[in-house]
Length: 371
Image 1 (spheres, rainbow, N blue to C red):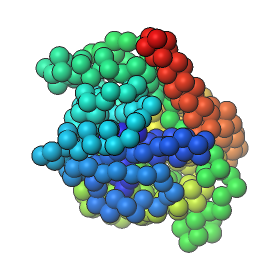
Image 2: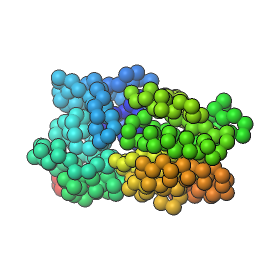
Image 3: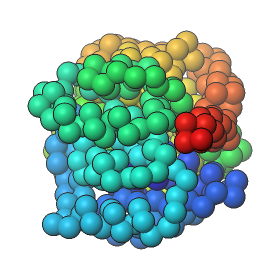
Image 4: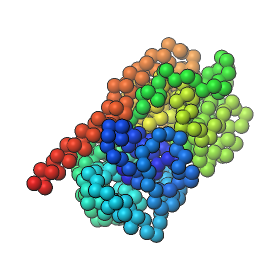
């Protein structure tokens, strides 16, 4: 597995790479994760496969978010060293066609290559400028995967081909109604609205704070809990003064399932550029009703099993939150529907089956070509 980002850097790619690797390893596969160095990179808080780190991760603004990019003067030689340290059957790259690890690994890999395209984005000038180089890497991908139709459409704007849509997954044992709520987070009679994610503009935290000020005037004894961190955290804390908002910052991975189970409503108010939303299926697995922005990636996951609102509209977001907080029967119905959908379509056992079957299918076809 190859990815620029991995624990402790948060996000959907990190979660996908970790859990896919872990579940493949449980099936007897020898899996190694090649990624960049991050601060406190060894303390990931979860059982892990072997991790090899190269370069030094630096934060760069990308797609209205922040991305950790591994850099090093000799990063290509380090990648080559890992590639040829053992004889691999498959190299599976994650992210998109960009420096550093995804691009440089594909250009050097002599193996059967897979790539999972994760992001949703618009037309990319960079893709067009560097298309000859990127096309060389793209043509070396035998197994092309996208986590959603939204992610597939994004990459197909520039590089056409046959893609297999295989979604992100969630551990339905780690996240579920059997998990005990997080102690000390919720007072008796209190309602909790939960947000989990990086505190950056595209995640819609500013809109959420405005919406929660409306909710607070309509409903008594309600609290907004925000899990996640970023350089903008202090800015959002200032904006939230006077409201019952608890910024938890970074929390231990082992505590996340219990925090979900403490919530009455989960909210994902992203403004766009979201190809999937792993936090959505974590909340659904935990049997927590979801309110999310009506953007393509979220709409594809939620369908009628949550409430969708126009992105950036604090009034509509507040109305949806109030509706669920005041109507426990609606909340209970959506919670049950969400759990059922996740178990049937997004458990890591199901997703790993799909990926593993695709591996064997592509490997078999590659052997036919060689012979």
